[in-house]
Image 1: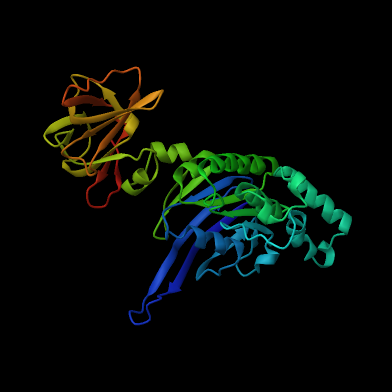
Image 2: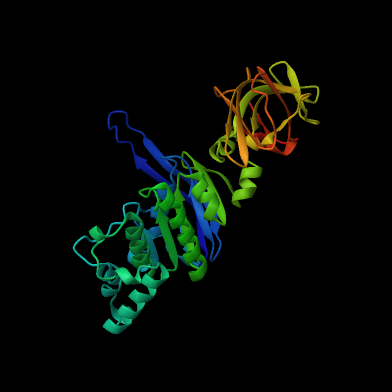
Length: 364
């Protein structure tokens, strides 16, 4: 099911009645979610991603704009008539019910032509449970399950109605690191097997990049960039997107362009033909450094952290916005810790330049 958002806006009244004013949670959001794809809504807390999800589900009404499922305008349709499955951050399972009863619950509320027999409901419930691999836990109560198992029950309950669209609101945030990894792989498997159009809300960029077909990066209710995860990482539209994606995060410097060369502090570190002379911000991905004794970028060496296949060289640079600069290089390289300085040449495709005022990308 294709989902189309047209000029979607959500405005909340200010909580401070004395100050007045309004809060624009989502601002003129236009985007089409292709049929059968998993799309990650990504951004920091308060960026409007959950509000967008709740407008798609019908739990919140947009202040303006339209929502289409396929060719059908569902903007004013109630949540129960939209055919969506919604999984919340806190699972929202009924504690007094067994797993089976929790999964059956949405089917028992179906009426009219959608009403099912007990046998049909049980068959559908076991199909959903088998899909998320909890079919052996059907007689347990939620309190007898681990966090990961509870999350699977919540997903099975959302899937049992065979929704047109599956909506996941930070579904992994209550799980420990290992379970998060395992469960996100399960979500991707389930989505591929069912082919259900899925919207996945998270503030964790690694989570979004690992399982999404497309990501939408948001800031203060405004869409910053849309694209395939690797494309957005490799080609950020602005400094916010560059800083938000990547682990370890991108290294940011204050620099200037003069005579077609990029300067960090007093050193010209890269040729940037065609870029006008100006003050800039410079982003260099941690993997964008080459150890080079003759390299133009010289840093004060602080530490080397060996991580097996790679090592992280921690250093300082006078132009750096952050206290430390982190370079990820292959552990086959040798760094002389007895020296105070370390020199690099830079990989041009891992260096991004941004206007110092607008923070928009300058391409070279």
